[in-house]
Picture 1 (cartoon, rainbow, N blue to C red):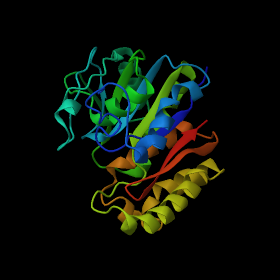
Picture 2: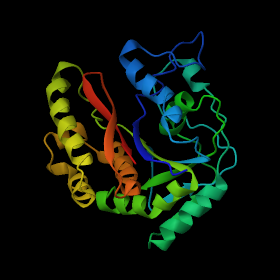
Picture 3: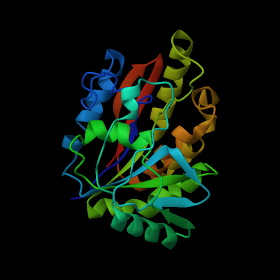
Length: 269
């Protein structure tokens, strides 16, 4: 059954696993609870359980689009300053080397240079949200990097190239944050992040898919864009998900406020 493509928020560091007494069970601060609840219900909200997941995280950039083809990837604890137990978390899902090869072939067929590797661990943009969404770690996953140039139109085009995977039972997930300015929190972020979020949501959910892609590619023209993303790596996974969504309907299926930030997630199809 055809899967949607998603742009999900992955939270802040190991935010859903801060209880040292029960580190493997999501138990977040009440502020993070709505996001945790959204991720918990993610798989049940799909038309069918996906046979595999292709996930692009805001925490991996390479010169060319790169697919992780490892059989049993380790975890890359690429966050800092959190309690010791959060560096012992586990999420032991199998890799999906066949999916990595298929995705690489689709990207090459669309004219992209690609690479594959098997040594890098899954970063927290993968294992933190997936540990909430797929706690049994029983859906194979392949990770796709961003391309280091962070060009929006290029990432939308890459998503379009990957869209056939949706018909093959693969869930395409962009994992980032719709607002990502770590230098501002609380009341100083509230109004500008809300205005940014409203403008981004209007662009992402534009019913005309051609206009939608153009508006989101031109995200810097939206109000408070540079405030929301001093650097755009956490927004670029949205471009891949949007491209993979093609002409399908786009909706905002998550909205919450954390650290004073308005944060949204989106579904295509």
